[in-house]
Amino acid sequence: MTERTGGPLDDRRSGPTVPRMILGARLRRLREARRITGAEAGEVIRASHSKISRLEMGRTGFKLRDVDDLLTLYGVDDAAERATLLALARQSNTPGWWHAYHDVVPSWLNVYLGLEQAAVVIRTYEQQFIPGLLQTEGYSRAVHRLSPEPQDGLLERRVELRMARQRILHRPGPPHLWAVIDEAALRRSMGSAAMMREQLEHLLEISRLAHITVQVLPFAAGGHAAVGGPVTVLRPPGAELPDVVYLEQLTGGVYPDKPAEIEQYRHVMNQVVIQAEPPTATADFLHRLLRET
Image (cartoon, rainbow, N blue to C red):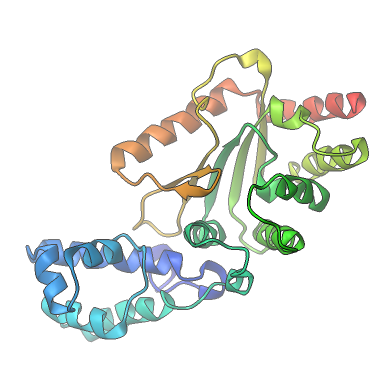
């Protein structure tokens, strides 16, 4: 099967996150179709109802024995279907390339990195900083210096990871990145004038790519739908999974997952896009900033 039909993914690209989510969603549908409770399923794999919930949400890895036992409980007899689901279970335990940066990747960020690397669409609004996927190395270094976390000589590792994440924008079949950047983020100096000019010039250059859309939300827009803070909405590959909302905070990340919450944040992003300057005005705006810098 291909990514489009929800079969095994290229784990070198997506890591374990998306395979976990796809497998979890399929197991949930199988369980519900047989009208088996989470507690009953948990007993079969010697686990709690909460463990079944975490598995079905894709928040943890799968043991092959547990998946095999659940498929038997759910009456999955077709050999091809079992093989596909067990292949997803194996992928769900395959570390992503960013595992090599485990010293600078907190547990809450692992889920996001897997989604970012596999997403077909990434929509983001930033009000304080240039979005991470669009930062230059110098700008990224300045941002990481602001972190409340102890640096312990790991600042360059954090910058290196951020630069490595940006490879998705230059690979074959890249995601569509749609970024709305608040004027405050563009005007806030993060270092020398030369470094800020380099960052603005980078935005100009990369926004010319067909799969990258950059909009500016100017001060003149006044109050707006995303006044509460940065928002990222990621669309996983295939048709089986809903969009994922990610809200980054000072010391962690939140993933609202109720359908009503996801729809609310999609609406927020749609409103911000409408309130922002059109993409065709971005180059002129950045050129004006460059003349002022």
